[in-house]
Image (cartoon, rainbow, N blue to C red; front, side):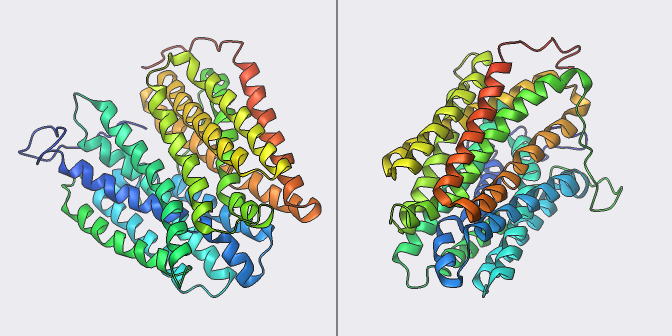
Length: 414
Protein backbone atom coordinates (compact mmCIF):
# COMPACT_ATOMS: atom_id res chain seq x y z
CA UNK A 1 0.00 0.00 0.00
CA UNK A 2 1.40 3.38 -0.93
CA UNK A 3 1.98 6.02 1.75
CA UNK A 4 -0.94 8.37 2.45
CA UNK A 5 0.51 11.86 2.19
CA UNK A 6 -2.75 13.61 3.03
CA UNK A 7 -3.51 11.65 6.21
CA UNK A 8 -3.99 13.50 9.49
CA UNK A 9 -4.60 12.07 12.94
CA UNK A 10 -7.78 13.17 14.73
CA UNK A 11 -6.89 16.43 16.38
CA UNK A 12 -6.63 16.81 20.12
CA UNK A 13 -6.50 13.13 20.94
CA UNK A 14 -2.95 12.14 20.16
CA UNK A 15 -2.10 8.78 18.64
CA UNK A 16 -4.69 6.09 19.14
CA UNK A 17 -3.85 3.50 21.73
CA UNK A 18 -5.01 -0.02 22.44
CA UNK A 19 -8.17 0.82 24.32
CA UNK A 20 -10.48 3.52 25.58
CA UNK A 21 -11.50 6.72 23.84
CA UNK A 22 -8.43 6.93 21.61
CA UNK A 23 -8.82 3.46 20.11
CA UNK A 24 -12.58 3.39 19.49
CA UNK A 25 -12.38 4.56 15.83
CA UNK A 26 -10.21 1.57 14.90
CA UNK A 27 -12.65 -0.89 16.42
CA UNK A 28 -15.66 0.83 14.85
CA UNK A 29 -13.98 0.68 11.44
CA UNK A 30 -13.05 -2.97 12.04
CA UNK A 31 -16.71 -3.80 12.75
CA UNK A 32 -17.82 -2.18 9.49
CA UNK A 33 -15.05 -4.00 7.60
CA UNK A 34 -16.08 -7.36 9.07
CA UNK A 35 -19.78 -6.83 8.29
CA UNK A 36 -19.11 -5.99 4.64
CA UNK A 37 -16.92 -9.08 4.21
CA UNK A 38 -19.56 -11.17 6.02
CA UNK A 39 -22.10 -10.11 3.42
CA UNK A 40 -19.92 -11.35 0.55
CA UNK A 41 -20.08 -15.00 1.66
CA UNK A 42 -23.70 -15.22 2.79
CA UNK A 43 -24.80 -16.90 -0.49
CA UNK A 44 -22.17 -19.67 -0.25
CA UNK A 45 -24.16 -22.29 1.73
CA UNK A 46 -27.35 -21.31 -0.12
CA UNK A 47 -26.16 -22.35 -3.59
CA UNK A 48 -27.63 -25.89 -3.42
CA UNK A 49 -31.01 -24.37 -2.50
CA UNK A 50 -30.82 -22.05 -5.53
CA UNK A 51 -29.91 -25.08 -7.66
CA UNK A 52 -32.97 -27.01 -6.52
CA UNK A 53 -35.31 -24.02 -6.69
CA UNK A 54 -34.38 -22.73 -10.14
CA UNK A 55 -32.64 -25.71 -11.74
CA UNK A 56 -29.19 -24.16 -11.95
CA UNK A 57 -26.30 -26.27 -13.19
CA UNK A 58 -22.85 -26.26 -11.51
CA UNK A 59 -21.66 -24.05 -14.38
CA UNK A 60 -24.25 -21.39 -13.51
CA UNK A 61 -23.21 -21.53 -9.84
CA UNK A 62 -19.56 -20.98 -10.76
CA UNK A 63 -20.53 -18.04 -12.99
CA UNK A 64 -22.52 -16.48 -10.13
CA UNK A 65 -19.50 -16.91 -7.90
CA UNK A 66 -17.09 -15.52 -10.50
CA UNK A 67 -19.17 -12.36 -10.97
CA UNK A 68 -18.22 -11.44 -7.40
CA UNK A 69 -14.52 -11.62 -8.28
CA UNK A 70 -15.11 -9.43 -11.34
CA UNK A 71 -16.73 -6.82 -9.09
CA UNK A 72 -13.78 -6.90 -6.69
CA UNK A 73 -11.28 -6.49 -9.53
CA UNK A 74 -13.27 -3.60 -11.01
CA UNK A 75 -13.29 -1.83 -7.64
CA UNK A 76 -9.57 -2.45 -7.10
CA UNK A 77 -8.75 -1.06 -10.54
CA UNK A 78 -11.10 1.93 -10.63
CA UNK A 79 -11.84 2.76 -6.98
CA UNK A 80 -8.72 1.56 -5.17
CA UNK A 81 -7.54 5.10 -4.35
CA UNK A 82 -11.03 6.54 -3.78
CA UNK A 83 -10.58 7.04 -0.03
CA UNK A 84 -7.33 8.96 -0.63
CA UNK A 85 -9.18 11.51 -2.77
CA UNK A 86 -12.66 11.87 -1.24
CA UNK A 87 -11.94 10.84 2.34
CA UNK A 88 -12.16 7.62 4.32
CA UNK A 89 -15.74 8.03 5.56
CA UNK A 90 -17.34 8.74 2.16
CA UNK A 91 -15.54 5.74 0.63
CA UNK A 92 -16.54 3.45 3.50
CA UNK A 93 -20.15 4.65 3.36
CA UNK A 94 -20.19 3.95 -0.39
CA UNK A 95 -18.97 0.42 0.30
CA UNK A 96 -21.67 -0.08 2.94
CA UNK A 97 -24.34 1.23 0.56
CA UNK A 98 -23.23 -1.23 -2.14
CA UNK A 99 -23.28 -4.06 0.41
CA UNK A 100 -26.83 -3.12 1.45
CA UNK A 101 -27.89 -2.94 -2.21
CA UNK A 102 -26.49 -6.44 -2.70
CA UNK A 103 -28.55 -7.76 0.21
CA UNK A 104 -31.68 -6.13 -1.23
CA UNK A 105 -30.99 -7.74 -4.61
CA UNK A 106 -30.88 -11.17 -2.97
CA UNK A 107 -34.03 -10.44 -0.97
CA UNK A 108 -35.91 -9.56 -4.15
CA UNK A 109 -34.30 -12.26 -6.30
CA UNK A 110 -36.64 -14.23 -8.51
CA UNK A 111 -34.06 -15.69 -10.85
CA UNK A 112 -30.52 -15.62 -12.18
CA UNK A 113 -30.39 -11.92 -13.14
CA UNK A 114 -30.92 -10.63 -9.60
CA UNK A 115 -28.31 -13.04 -8.22
CA UNK A 116 -25.73 -11.79 -10.73
CA UNK A 117 -26.51 -8.18 -9.83
CA UNK A 118 -26.28 -8.97 -6.13
CA UNK A 119 -22.91 -10.68 -6.51
CA UNK A 120 -21.51 -7.84 -8.62
CA UNK A 121 -22.58 -5.26 -6.04
CA UNK A 122 -21.10 -7.41 -3.29
CA UNK A 123 -17.79 -7.58 -5.16
CA UNK A 124 -17.69 -3.81 -5.57
CA UNK A 125 -18.31 -3.31 -1.86
CA UNK A 126 -15.55 -5.76 -0.94
CA UNK A 127 -13.13 -4.14 -3.38
CA UNK A 128 -13.71 -0.70 -1.86
CA UNK A 129 -13.26 -2.00 1.67
CA UNK A 130 -10.11 -3.94 0.76
CA UNK A 131 -8.38 -0.61 0.18
CA UNK A 132 -10.35 1.94 2.21
CA UNK A 133 -10.99 -0.31 5.21
CA UNK A 134 -7.36 -1.39 5.51
CA UNK A 135 -6.18 2.21 5.14
CA UNK A 136 -8.63 3.43 7.79
CA UNK A 137 -7.41 0.86 10.29
CA UNK A 138 -3.83 1.88 9.54
CA UNK A 139 -4.75 5.53 10.19
CA UNK A 140 -6.11 4.75 13.65
CA UNK A 141 -3.68 2.03 14.69
CA UNK A 142 -1.14 2.89 17.42
CA UNK A 143 2.09 4.22 15.80
CA UNK A 144 4.13 2.25 18.33
CA UNK A 145 2.52 -0.99 17.15
CA UNK A 146 1.92 -0.80 13.38
CA UNK A 147 1.41 -4.58 13.25
CA UNK A 148 -1.76 -4.23 15.35
CA UNK A 149 -3.68 -2.45 12.59
CA UNK A 150 -2.66 -5.03 9.96
CA UNK A 151 -3.62 -7.83 12.35
CA UNK A 152 -7.02 -6.26 12.99
CA UNK A 153 -7.52 -5.81 9.23
CA UNK A 154 -6.71 -9.48 8.62
CA UNK A 155 -9.05 -10.58 11.40
CA UNK A 156 -11.88 -8.38 10.12
CA UNK A 157 -11.40 -9.53 6.52
CA UNK A 158 -11.01 -13.28 7.01
CA UNK A 159 -13.20 -13.37 10.11
CA UNK A 160 -16.02 -11.68 8.24
CA UNK A 161 -15.67 -14.07 5.28
CA UNK A 162 -15.82 -17.10 7.54
CA UNK A 163 -18.63 -15.85 9.74
CA UNK A 164 -20.77 -15.06 6.70
CA UNK A 165 -20.87 -18.69 5.56
CA UNK A 166 -21.48 -19.94 9.09
CA UNK A 167 -24.23 -17.42 9.82
CA UNK A 168 -26.10 -18.03 6.57
CA UNK A 169 -25.78 -21.80 6.90
CA UNK A 170 -27.18 -21.88 10.43
CA UNK A 171 -30.00 -19.45 9.63
CA UNK A 172 -30.93 -21.34 6.47
CA UNK A 173 -31.05 -24.60 8.43
CA UNK A 174 -33.51 -23.30 11.04
CA UNK A 175 -35.50 -20.62 9.19
CA UNK A 176 -38.72 -21.01 7.29
CA UNK A 177 -37.39 -18.53 4.71
CA UNK A 178 -33.78 -19.72 4.24
CA UNK A 179 -33.16 -17.53 1.19
CA UNK A 180 -34.42 -14.37 2.90
CA UNK A 181 -33.52 -14.36 6.61
CA UNK A 182 -29.70 -14.25 6.14
CA UNK A 183 -30.00 -11.05 4.12
CA UNK A 184 -32.43 -9.42 6.56
CA UNK A 185 -29.88 -10.11 9.29
CA UNK A 186 -27.18 -8.66 7.03
CA UNK A 187 -29.13 -5.42 6.65
CA UNK A 188 -29.63 -5.30 10.42
CA UNK A 189 -25.84 -5.59 10.89
CA UNK A 190 -25.12 -2.94 8.24
CA UNK A 191 -27.22 -0.28 10.01
CA UNK A 192 -24.92 0.02 13.07
CA UNK A 193 -21.93 -0.33 10.73
CA UNK A 194 -23.05 2.86 8.94
CA UNK A 195 -23.49 4.60 12.29
CA UNK A 196 -20.00 3.45 13.30
CA UNK A 197 -18.44 4.89 10.15
CA UNK A 198 -20.25 8.20 10.60
CA UNK A 199 -18.95 8.36 14.18
CA UNK A 200 -15.25 7.94 13.36
CA UNK A 201 -13.15 11.07 12.72
CA UNK A 202 -12.08 11.80 9.15
CA UNK A 203 -8.33 11.41 8.62
CA UNK A 204 -7.97 12.50 4.98
CA UNK A 205 -8.19 15.99 3.52
CA UNK A 206 -9.97 15.85 0.19
CA UNK A 207 -7.55 16.40 -2.65
CA UNK A 208 -10.18 17.80 -5.01
CA UNK A 209 -8.33 16.43 -8.02
CA UNK A 210 -9.58 13.93 -10.59
CA UNK A 211 -12.94 12.20 -10.82
CA UNK A 212 -14.30 9.38 -8.73
CA UNK A 213 -12.98 6.76 -11.12
CA UNK A 214 -9.23 6.55 -11.58
CA UNK A 215 -7.72 3.44 -13.12
CA UNK A 216 -4.89 1.99 -11.03
CA UNK A 217 -1.81 1.10 -13.06
CA UNK A 218 -0.75 -2.54 -12.88
CA UNK A 219 3.02 -2.64 -13.20
CA UNK A 220 5.85 -4.49 -11.48
CA UNK A 221 9.44 -3.17 -11.38
CA UNK A 222 11.74 -5.26 -13.55
CA UNK A 223 14.00 -6.18 -10.63
CA UNK A 224 11.00 -7.52 -8.68
CA UNK A 225 9.37 -9.65 -11.37
CA UNK A 226 10.94 -12.96 -10.31
CA UNK A 227 9.85 -12.46 -6.71
CA UNK A 228 6.43 -11.27 -7.87
CA UNK A 229 5.95 -14.33 -10.09
CA UNK A 230 6.63 -16.69 -7.20
CA UNK A 231 4.43 -14.83 -4.73
CA UNK A 232 1.63 -14.51 -7.29
CA UNK A 233 1.78 -18.19 -8.29
CA UNK A 234 1.43 -19.34 -4.69
CA UNK A 235 -1.31 -16.80 -4.00
CA UNK A 236 -3.14 -17.74 -7.21
CA UNK A 237 -3.14 -21.42 -6.23
CA UNK A 238 -4.36 -20.65 -2.70
CA UNK A 239 -7.20 -18.41 -3.87
CA UNK A 240 -8.21 -21.00 -6.46
CA UNK A 241 -8.56 -23.54 -3.64
CA UNK A 242 -10.63 -21.15 -1.53
CA UNK A 243 -12.78 -20.52 -4.60
CA UNK A 244 -13.29 -24.26 -5.00
CA UNK A 245 -14.55 -24.57 -1.43
CA UNK A 246 -16.74 -21.48 -1.64
CA UNK A 247 -18.35 -22.30 -4.99
CA UNK A 248 -18.38 -26.09 -5.14
CA UNK A 249 -18.10 -27.59 -1.64
CA UNK A 250 -21.79 -27.01 -0.77
CA UNK A 251 -22.86 -28.70 -4.03
CA UNK A 252 -20.40 -31.55 -3.43
CA UNK A 253 -21.81 -32.11 0.04
CA UNK A 254 -25.39 -32.10 -1.23
CA UNK A 255 -24.96 -34.15 -4.42
CA UNK A 256 -22.19 -36.65 -3.71
CA UNK A 257 -22.27 -37.02 0.08
CA UNK A 258 -26.06 -36.57 0.32
CA UNK A 259 -25.51 -34.03 3.13
CA UNK A 260 -27.60 -31.07 1.99
CA UNK A 261 -27.49 -29.21 5.32
CA UNK A 262 -26.65 -25.54 4.65
CA UNK A 263 -25.28 -25.33 8.21
CA UNK A 264 -22.73 -28.03 7.40
CA UNK A 265 -21.80 -26.35 4.12
CA UNK A 266 -21.31 -23.04 5.89
CA UNK A 267 -19.23 -24.68 8.61
CA UNK A 268 -16.88 -26.37 6.11
CA UNK A 269 -16.15 -23.08 4.33
CA UNK A 270 -15.83 -21.33 7.70
CA UNK A 271 -13.11 -23.83 8.64
CA UNK A 272 -11.14 -22.82 5.54
CA UNK A 273 -11.22 -19.08 6.32
CA UNK A 274 -10.58 -19.62 10.04
CA UNK A 275 -7.54 -21.74 9.18
CA UNK A 276 -6.33 -19.06 6.78
CA UNK A 277 -6.54 -16.46 9.55
CA UNK A 278 -4.69 -18.82 11.90
CA UNK A 279 -2.01 -19.31 9.24
CA UNK A 280 -1.40 -15.59 9.04
CA UNK A 281 -1.10 -15.38 12.83
CA UNK A 282 1.37 -18.28 12.95
CA UNK A 283 3.36 -16.74 10.10
CA UNK A 284 4.63 -13.99 12.39
CA UNK A 285 6.44 -16.62 14.49
CA UNK A 286 8.11 -18.34 11.52
CA UNK A 287 11.44 -17.45 9.86
CA UNK A 288 10.72 -15.06 6.99
CA UNK A 289 12.12 -17.42 4.32
CA UNK A 290 9.97 -20.33 5.51
CA UNK A 291 6.56 -18.74 4.93
CA UNK A 292 6.14 -19.17 1.19
CA UNK A 293 7.52 -22.76 1.02
CA UNK A 294 5.25 -23.73 3.94
CA UNK A 295 2.32 -22.16 2.11
CA UNK A 296 3.05 -24.11 -1.07
CA UNK A 297 3.30 -27.37 0.90
CA UNK A 298 0.01 -26.60 2.62
CA UNK A 299 -1.71 -25.93 -0.71
CA UNK A 300 -0.37 -29.16 -2.21
CA UNK A 301 -1.44 -31.25 0.79
CA UNK A 302 -4.79 -29.46 0.99
CA UNK A 303 -5.44 -30.15 -2.69
CA UNK A 304 -4.50 -33.82 -2.15
CA UNK A 305 -6.85 -34.20 0.81
CA UNK A 306 -9.66 -32.52 -1.13
CA UNK A 307 -9.04 -34.87 -4.07
CA UNK A 308 -9.23 -37.80 -1.65
CA UNK A 309 -12.54 -36.45 -0.34
CA UNK A 310 -13.90 -36.33 -3.88
CA UNK A 311 -12.63 -39.80 -4.77
CA UNK A 312 -13.76 -41.48 -1.55
CA UNK A 313 -16.90 -39.45 -0.75
CA UNK A 314 -15.34 -38.57 2.59
CA UNK A 315 -16.49 -35.68 4.77
CA UNK A 316 -13.47 -36.15 7.06
CA UNK A 317 -11.03 -35.68 4.18
CA UNK A 318 -12.96 -32.63 2.99
CA UNK A 319 -12.70 -30.96 6.42
CA UNK A 320 -9.02 -31.89 6.65
CA UNK A 321 -8.49 -30.40 3.20
CA UNK A 322 -10.18 -27.18 4.31
CA UNK A 323 -7.90 -26.93 7.36
CA UNK A 324 -4.65 -27.63 5.52
CA UNK A 325 -5.50 -25.57 2.43
CA UNK A 326 -6.58 -22.69 4.67
CA UNK A 327 -3.28 -22.76 6.54
CA UNK A 328 -1.47 -22.86 3.21
CA UNK A 329 -3.42 -19.83 2.02
CA UNK A 330 -2.59 -17.90 5.18
CA UNK A 331 1.11 -18.71 4.88
CA UNK A 332 1.41 -18.06 1.15
CA UNK A 333 -0.58 -14.81 0.95
CA UNK A 334 0.98 -13.35 4.11
CA UNK A 335 4.53 -14.32 3.10
CA UNK A 336 3.99 -13.19 -0.48
CA UNK A 337 2.83 -9.74 0.59
CA UNK A 338 5.74 -9.44 3.01
CA UNK A 339 8.23 -10.31 0.25
CA UNK A 340 6.71 -7.78 -2.12
CA UNK A 341 6.54 -5.00 0.48
CA UNK A 342 10.17 -5.58 1.42
CA UNK A 343 11.40 -5.41 -2.15
CA UNK A 344 9.20 -2.65 -3.61
CA UNK A 345 10.18 1.03 -3.50
CA UNK A 346 7.70 2.95 -1.33
CA UNK A 347 6.41 5.04 -4.23
CA UNK A 348 5.38 1.95 -6.23
CA UNK A 349 3.79 -0.23 -3.54
CA UNK A 350 0.29 0.76 -4.62
CA UNK A 351 0.59 -0.51 -8.17
CA UNK A 352 2.48 -3.66 -7.11
CA UNK A 353 -0.05 -4.61 -4.40
CA UNK A 354 -2.93 -3.87 -6.80
CA UNK A 355 -1.32 -6.11 -9.42
CA UNK A 356 -0.95 -8.86 -6.83
CA UNK A 357 -4.54 -8.73 -5.62
CA UNK A 358 -5.97 -8.52 -9.14
CA UNK A 359 -4.19 -11.79 -9.98
CA UNK A 360 -5.45 -13.36 -6.77
CA UNK A 361 -9.04 -12.44 -7.51
CA UNK A 362 -8.68 -13.69 -11.07
CA UNK A 363 -8.05 -17.04 -9.38
CA UNK A 364 -11.59 -16.79 -7.99
CA UNK A 365 -13.09 -16.42 -11.45
CA UNK A 366 -11.29 -17.96 -14.43
CA UNK A 367 -10.32 -21.36 -12.93
CA UNK A 368 -13.68 -21.74 -11.17
CA UNK A 369 -15.65 -21.04 -14.35
CA UNK A 370 -13.33 -23.46 -16.16
CA UNK A 371 -14.22 -26.10 -13.60
CA UNK A 372 -17.90 -25.39 -14.19
CA UNK A 373 -17.41 -25.99 -17.90
CA UNK A 374 -15.55 -29.24 -17.28
CA UNK A 375 -18.29 -30.34 -14.88
CA UNK A 376 -20.78 -30.09 -17.75
CA UNK A 377 -18.66 -32.54 -19.75
CA UNK A 378 -17.37 -34.99 -17.15
CA UNK A 379 -19.30 -34.57 -13.90
CA UNK A 380 -18.65 -32.83 -10.58
CA UNK A 381 -16.28 -35.43 -9.11
CA UNK A 382 -14.06 -35.68 -12.18
CA UNK A 383 -13.92 -31.92 -12.64
CA UNK A 384 -12.94 -31.50 -8.99
CA UNK A 385 -10.11 -34.01 -9.36
CA UNK A 386 -8.80 -32.19 -12.44
CA UNK A 387 -9.03 -28.85 -10.63
CA UNK A 388 -7.22 -30.03 -7.49
CA UNK A 389 -4.48 -31.55 -9.67
CA UNK A 390 -4.04 -28.20 -11.44
CA UNK A 391 -3.76 -26.36 -8.12
CA UNK A 392 -1.26 -28.88 -6.74
CA UNK A 393 0.91 -28.68 -9.86
CA UNK A 394 0.95 -24.88 -9.77
CA UNK A 395 1.92 -24.84 -6.08
CA UNK A 396 4.57 -27.53 -6.68
CA UNK A 397 6.09 -25.50 -9.52
CA UNK A 398 6.27 -22.49 -7.21
CA UNK A 399 7.87 -24.62 -4.47
CA UNK A 400 10.52 -25.92 -6.88
CA UNK A 401 11.29 -22.40 -8.08
CA UNK A 402 11.99 -21.33 -4.48
CA UNK A 403 15.10 -23.53 -4.47
CA UNK A 404 16.73 -20.82 -6.60
CA UNK A 405 16.81 -17.68 -4.41
CA UNK A 406 15.80 -14.50 -6.27
CA UNK A 407 18.53 -11.95 -6.83
CA UNK A 408 18.76 -9.18 -4.28
CA UNK A 409 16.50 -6.27 -5.15
CA UNK A 410 18.45 -3.01 -5.50
CA UNK A 411 17.13 -0.41 -3.10
CA UNK A 412 14.76 -2.79 -1.41
CA UNK A 413 12.73 -1.12 1.23
CA UNK A 414 13.64 2.32 -0.09
